[in-house]
Amino acid sequence: EAEVAQSPRYKITEKSQAVAFWCDPISGHATLYWYRQILGQGPELLVQFQDESVVDDSQLPKDRFSAERLKGVDSTLKIQPAELGDSAMYLCASSLGTVNTEAFFGQGTRLTVV
Amino acid sequence: AQRVTQPEKLLSVFKGAPVELKCNYSYSGSPELFWYVQYSRQRLQLLLRHISRESIKGFTADLNKGETSFHLKKPFAQEEDSAMYYCALSGTGSYIPTFGRGTSLIVHP
Image 1 (cartoon, rainbow over the protein chains, first blue to last red):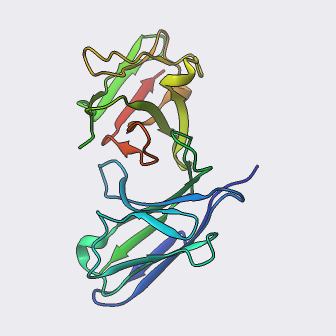
Image 2: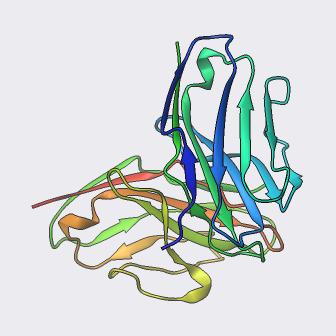
């Protein structure tokens, strides 16, 4: 069964360092999402791609966060510099891209900033 | 703006008891509502959506536009239903699901 792949599963980094997460969506899924989930809260959308284009990044802290999906397939989310408050689970999801379709989630990357 | 409210952080029941996980939403248009579930050490996955009107694993949810609610119900809870449940909303023409904070369901033997 096809799944969304994310790496790494866990990442510990020091404050002010750079960190990057990778996501490979299900083949054929045009829409890709990055969510952040702080402990005890629901997932919060950071950025949405439709193919290689950003559809919505209104909740992405652009002074330190960046995301790209250059060929419209896999995607990278970067944080530079990392802050203590960035500690969270970062989830990637993908969907076929038509309206109101199911989002399939990856296992997530657990980031701890120390 | 769209918003999803799940008032209960934790719901604890005994096996065989009825379960109702509450979800209220705020959206000015016509919403699409979902329930996602996350079992221990597994990824978040879709449980059901209102448009399909299905019963999945014994769970049902009815969209009540008058009360702006989409409560998840099951008449007889099972231990394997223990998980985190998230209500989510997409607006008409929007691809972007907005999630509630989640309710942890614990079913005791």
